[in-house]
Structures are given as C-alpha cells and as structure tokens.
Length: 200
Image (cartoon, rainbow, N blue to C red; front, side, top):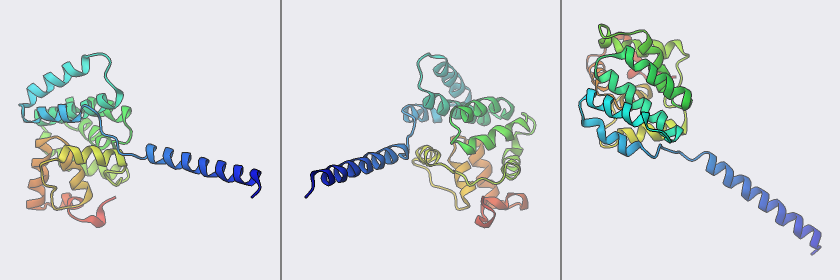
C-alpha cells in the first residue's frame, strides 16, 4: 500500500478521535466540586445556612462554578426564611455565572415580584414567570440536570411535569412544600405542574 495513503488515513483517524474526545469532554455533566459540602448544610435553620454561605462566598479563590452553586443555595435559604426579595440577587448572580441554570433564572425574576408579605405566592408567581419567559423546558441543559439530580439525592421526585420536578429539586423546603400542596389541591393556576402538555 502507498505510504502517502497510509499517512493520510492515520491522520484522518487521529483527527476524528481527537474531535470525538473533545465533544465527549465538552458535553460531560459537571457538578460543582463543593456541592456535597454545601448540601450538607441543608438541615440547618435557614438563618444559619445564610450565615455560613455568606462566609463561604466571602472567602477568596473559589471556583466560578462553585460560587454559582453557592449563590443558588443562598437564594434558596432566603426563600426558606420567607424573604424572596432577598433571594433575587443571589439567583441573579448564580444565573449570570452559570447561564445553564435556567430554573434559577425563573426564580430570579419571580423573586423580584415578591416580598416577605407575598412569600406564600412563590410557586404561583414562579409558574407565571415561567410562562412569561417563554415556558423553557426545565432543566434544559445537561449541567443543570446533573446539579438538580445531585440536589435531589435521597428525596423522591414529585409525580408531575418536568417543571414540577425541576423546581422541587432545588434545595428549598419552602418551594417543595408549596409544590406538594399544589399537587395535592390542584388549583387551576398550577396546571403546568402536572400537565406535561403544558410543559415547555
């Protein structure tokens, strides 16, 4: 066989192998390295979680992906404290640092509409906001699916739509409680939680 042909074939195979390896590497689900350590704080009262997360975030040298997840946790802690207006900023920071967190974008916009007197409307406003931002399929990205699956460890997923599963996977007991109540009582406004045809 001609040595030039062999060299061309070997080069082509090498290029294909390198491209395939790069695609596999780029598409791998990556969860933040801090995820397990920060989720261990979930059983603490919301005020203690807020304090620990704010201290953790103030330490220099944290990876961007870790900081984004810590801001998600901080926003969820503010939700659990009944202060969605305080949760808006951490959710915004998390989404800007990690644009694959689309469920966090929905919560950032939702929390800007609420305050401590309207915190019990969180789920209703989140569904409304989800509709306003174009009903995205949540979780949309491989990275967000991996993070939400990790957050859900040890908890069952609610019987409902992808929207219900994504929102219930976030580390907020207040949000999960509202989802459980809505899936039980089935108010009209909460239809997207159980009707997959209304899912993005």
